[in-house]
Amino acid sequence: MSTVFNFTFVPWFRAVAPYIHKFRHQTFVVGVPGEAIAAGKLPNLVQDLALIQSMGVRVVLVHGFRPQVDEQLRAKGHAARFHSGIRITDPVALDCAQEAAGQLRFEIEAAFSMGLPNTPMAGAKVRVISGNFITARPVGIVDGVDFQHSGLVRKVDVAGIKGALDMGALVLLSPFGFSLTGEAFNLTMEEVATSVAVALQADKLIFVTEIPGIRVRPFDPPGEDNPIDTELSLADAQAILAQAPTPTQPTEPAFYLQHCVRACLGGVERSHIIPFAVDGSLLLEVYVHDGIGTMVVDEKLENLREATPDDVGGILQLIEPFERDGTLVKRSRTEIERDIANYTIIEHDGVIFGCAALYPYPEAKTGEMAALTVAPQAQGQGDGERLLKRIEQRARLMGLQSIFVLTTRTMHWFLKRGFQPVSPDWLPEARKRKYNWDRRSQVLVKRLS
Ligand SMILES: CC(C)(COP(=O)(O)OP(=O)(O)OC[C@H]1O[C@@H](n2cnc3c(N)ncnc32)[C@H](O)[C@@H]1OP(=O)(O)O)[C@@H](O)C(=O)NCCC(=O)NCCS
Image 1 (cartoon, rainbow, N blue to C red):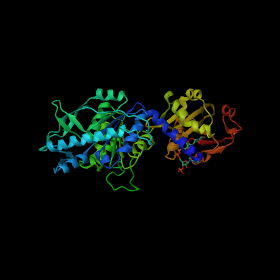
Image 2: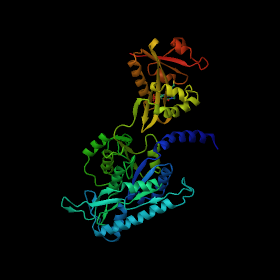
Image 3: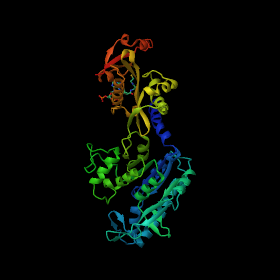
Image 4: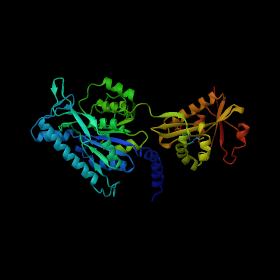
């Protein structure tokens, strides 16, 4: 085995591990439009969903069937009719929808049943459960247009879905619902996925769509200067919706975004819009720091705060690789537990990405900033600087006039930020006694104005 592989594989696996822990036992509702299936993306999507499920995530998959229903209608020589982006389901369209749903459900179940040799899920078995989990009501007559058999979700059978998930099954839903009188209604994938996510209070709602996400300037053409906005606050998402006309096509920015906002308002903490065109987009969005598409959240998730005893494990995990390569001095769990009140952390999506500690020496009116660390995958985005600022602020509040660091490898980072080298003799007496002369760390001081 090549050593290059070791150096790439091991850090990669360690970087993913916190997400695997975090998402175990969480519930994700994943909406896949019929377009993704028509584009031949089903086999890879199924593999990724099976992989996510095997890591302990409870998955509800909702499929759409817009192009498949249109195809059936064409075959019958019947025109597809829409109003405000919603299908008008006449009896012929209802027949077509039932046929398309039956066929797609069959295809999806077959894909999950494959032994999947030579795939990441070789040997795994995914049990799929579908059922009459959705009660529907008619859209009715709107603006004088009778939507006939087009419906909206009236109720979600939460206990039924949770029961199936508890059995370890993946729940598969078609955009269909039944009224209490047994009448069938054609729903949209987006409406079913959102209603189910809200009813279950899912941890994530993910739309795997024909668009790559929402751009920084949502209504301007794509380009290097108009990239995908990886994280949108609820307020920003609402502002975009306020400017956008009522969407009728899935490629319009507001089409999926309106459902993400509804989910967010309904208590689903995170909703995502990711592209099906990119193979593995689900894995990239869920298990990588910035993801690949757009995530809508109730507030900015990146959070700078003082640490609590619950953070000890996360801090240890973050600093351990830097202790091993000698960048940081080794600290034991007991030591960190004892000093936890000295730590400040940055967390993103519940995972700790950065930390720093302040050890005050009030008698010398100075304090040591120690264990400043930002996870390798999050470096270079200003988190180190933010942690430094917070430590400076904490030091000022304690009435300290300077902070100092001991470093062997990061001298230039500190010099650039106003620190100056001094001799170890400068250190407060209590710290000087602990100075490790073998390590020959450089002492750098920053005066606080
Ligand atoms: C030092 C560290 C905390 C900086 O975190 P960060 O979030 O990447 O910092 P910022 O984004 O605020 O700053 C990034 C800048 O610092 C530079 N930088 C990163 N590590 C550096 C180092 N060891 N020496 C000099 N500059 C460094 C980057 O090149 C980048 O420069 P630029 O702004 O000119 O592009 C991070 O690199 C780290 O955790 N290093 C390992 C642990 C460590 O050395 N801690 C200090 C112990 S005393």
